[in-house]
Length: 146
Image 1 (spheres, rainbow, N blue to C red):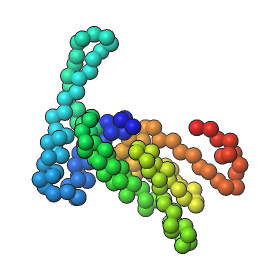
Image 2 (cartoon, rainbow, N blue to C red; image 1 turned 180 degrees about the vertical axis):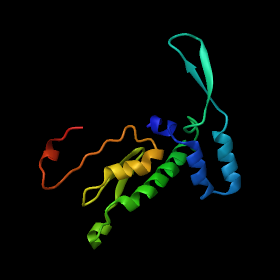
Image 3 (spheres, rainbow, N blue to C red; image 1 turned 60 degrees about the horizontal axis):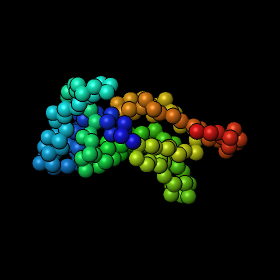
Image 4 (spheres, one colour; image 1 turned 120 degrees about the vertical axis):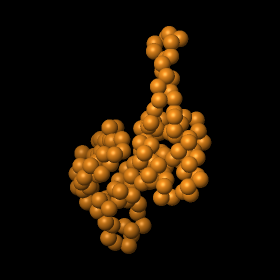
């Protein structure tokens, strides 16, 4: 899960936050995300290299999961219009996606254009994206192992 937190584009996150929080709160978040310095230790040596980072959220900070959820929700907001619309009343009670931490599953009655979704999410980290299409008429999914 930490890799997801570490790949957040801060500029995108700040743009999202500008639309939902007050200026004073935004200033505090900007301060939290600015001038982040990281240490890297090479091998077992005591020598450390310091460098600045402009991606991710600060490790150990209590706002870290909240900032991630805001970032994820914005990504999902961009994807939802691409998902097939649920038509019947019983279908409308079903979610289009299920998200837990940094894992998201999309649910649709029809095949989803995965390439289109990945195109929209290109600004987000899709390096580890995997997808599986389950079709009720095909039985191969029953033996699928992840």
